[in-house]
Length: 213
Image (spheres, rainbow, N blue to C red):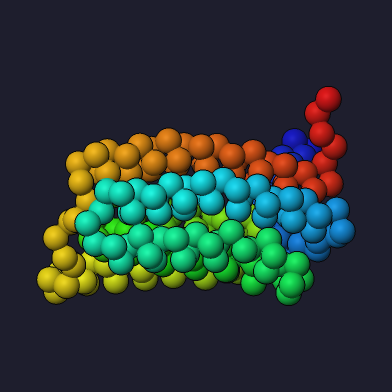
């Protein structure tokens, strides 16, 4: 009798584990209702604002503290395109298109900033790690996986440029380097903290769990 009860308990635990890993962590289909889409629209606005502050600050660092004027031109162009992401969503009604507009602008600028300020050894490359997170929050798992590979590809491309001697000498001043380092440290802490809150809030919508009072 005890053996039979033990077997039943083991089977129940196995079933619970299968349910947990199969449907909760890696669900095949997450349907978005109007409430979720509205939340993602507000999330798009917030992420555009937060990352936009970083983009524009890097642009002004490029303008005043980097000798090559090309970087500032790239920075301001990408920052403007990045700021248009909410309008892109309004025009296309497609969150993936708006999210891609945002992260492509960010990737081009951060790749360029790294290229002119140290290449493969520039700490600015760490921002590539945030891009799949942004896309994943705004869209779905598929796009997060795509941007994980794209970010790795861009990182390896910079390594190839560095290895082939195609990266110029760093043209950023010491003060500019210090400011950029502050942007990386404080900006990354702020974004990861904010994105964690956004993710937890979004999880409530997906799993229809009530909020704690």
